[in-house]
Image (cartoon, rainbow, N blue to C red; front, side, top):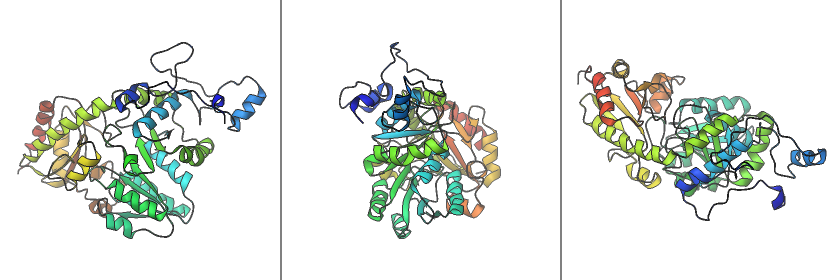
Length: 405
């Protein structure tokens, strides 16, 4: 379509850096000249005449038609996130899990095969397992074993799906190595970038084809809304995903998109500060006699420390997982003794959250599946927010003191 039939773009200097894009990319202001992005709460859009409406519905003219698949506020969020991830395009969804559903519906068919890390979010594992009823088979492999990924390839392999760092062990996969396996096979590599966000990691730079987000986490940053997104090439998003969105409607609401849009403005500041505080907490936890093991990519003790520092801009992220002596009972005692931390399975919030993965985020898995993923009953996941670190140490020390080392 001609340039006059496309939506206008924000006028920014060429080469604008990520922190500038985070507050400026989107759509130009309306005729009213608002400085803060407008919130368009409307289900549909009016056309000047029937012929124009027909052209817009046929995609002959780029315009806003119906908010199930096109809305100015959602488009602003999509453009901004795409710019931060270094992708050509983005499509917002109603949740992170809806993003994975959209990915599968847009790219796979009966008989296709998926290779997925066994260390991903529990609901992601369950969703891929559920696709078996539609003829899409999934093989789960070790997050960090490149040979296992390579060995799982079949003639029908069409998608590799990884989450790095993983939830909750913060295992890091080699994105470039997985991209090479995928592309030699004719498959796509999708990376869940939830734990790092583009403030620390841009998987497309390392060869990933698609980046998936639960915008509920760091992109929002204050635990206010549910949102998701997929970032990729313009052809992939518009040819594969938009048609499914128009039919199936896993749509991101304009209000939720606006909240995420505003959250992106402070993303870099929040994530880097939270990463620094998480590292301090990790060092402190490692020194506690009641703690058996600490997982944080910035720690030299982390098995993929060097790889994480190379992929994640030298930062480890805000999630620290640790195993306490005494199993489930001891883990519950530590969690229940907190007064500052929020006991919730969400993460990426400015408020520190604490949870027991075996009984919450991964509670729907079988115990053998949890053991295979390294998620033991004594594990606690701490997603560090912006509170004073000394207050967080005191909060955890209260519970740890109840455990006999």
